[in-house]
Amino acid sequence: TNTDAGFASTRRGSCPANNGDGDENLAALDLVTPNSFDNNYFKNLIQKKGLLQSDQVLFSGGCADSIVTGYSKSPSTFTLILHQPWLRWETLNLSLALLERYENSAVL
Image (tube, one colour):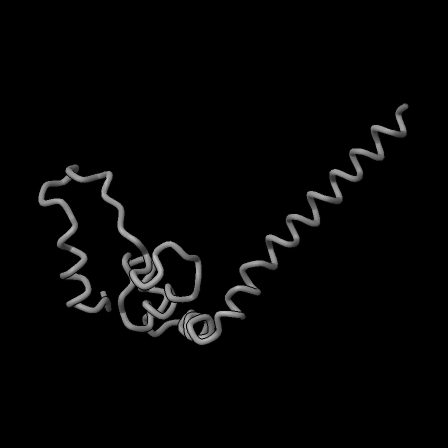
C-alpha cells in the first residue's frame, strides 16, 4: 500500500497479536479530530495516513485524488456537499408528511 510506514507501524501497535483477540478494539479514522466529522480525514489521506487500505486508495494517484485534495483544502466545500443530501431528505420527509396529513384530512 502507499500508507506511511511509520504511521502504519504505530497503529499496528494497537492490534492484537492473535487473530480474534481484541475484536472490540476501536481506532479513530482521524487522529486529529476523532470526535468530529470534518475534512481532516482527507488531509490524513494526503499525508498517507489513512487508517484502512480501502481509505488510502482514495488518494493513490487515481481519479479520486482531485476530490480528496479539494475536500482537504476547503472545509466549507466538504460541509456543503455533505449537507445537500441531508437537506433533500428532510425536504422529502416534510413533503410526505404534509401529503399524508392532507390525504387523512380529505377522508374526513
